[in-house]
Amino acid sequence: MLLLRSTLFLLGQVITAPIFTLVALLSLPLPPVTRNVLISGWARSMIWWLRITCNIRHEIQGLENIPATPSIILAKHQSAWETLAFQAIFPTQVYVLKRELLWIPIFGWGLAMSSPIAIDRSAGREALKKLVAKGKARLAKGLWVVIFPEGTRKAPGERGKYHIGGAWLATHTETQVVPVAHNAGKFWAKNSFIKKPGVIQIHIGKPIPTVNVKTDALNSQVEDWIESEMATLN
Image (tube, rainbow, N blue to C red; front, side):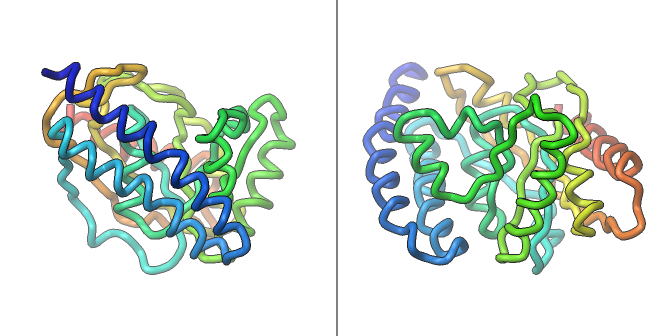
């Protein structure tokens, strides 16, 4: 049954992705926020489809902590789920991601239309400079920025190194950070075709101010909050 449900979910993705890629291309002349609202319709529809086919739902703690102004989301990364669900939970956003994702046929083309901040991870200091320049421009247009500090998906109970990029962007643009913890990997695991039914728990922390805060200190504060929340979720 899990195999059948997961297959139905995949079929929904495959059928609808080209449609929303076309929408993304047609929306290119529109302002970034308007364009991203249209493009994120695919993610919102997939969260609905996931509930219908695989019986995966979610509960949110801390909705009242979402600020009214564009912010930087620093979140745990366990699954593909959060890249979809965040688009339904938070205001219009862009993702910081590795540039190779934009090379994927159809999916990557649509992703490129959403104004992501594509980074060459091997560029070192130069990548941080571009992150700040592009991040500042996105925030000025009213877009939130989502970054996964660990860089790649980690299995439940696994803890990766929290890279400094997200905290660097926040302190250099003096933008508040919203930390997020969740346990999506328990139901939609990394590189797993099978999705398990259940209720994903997502915890949204209070905004963390970054004015006159050192980058390392902010990064440690975010890591401590997320990992302490993960201990309760796991």
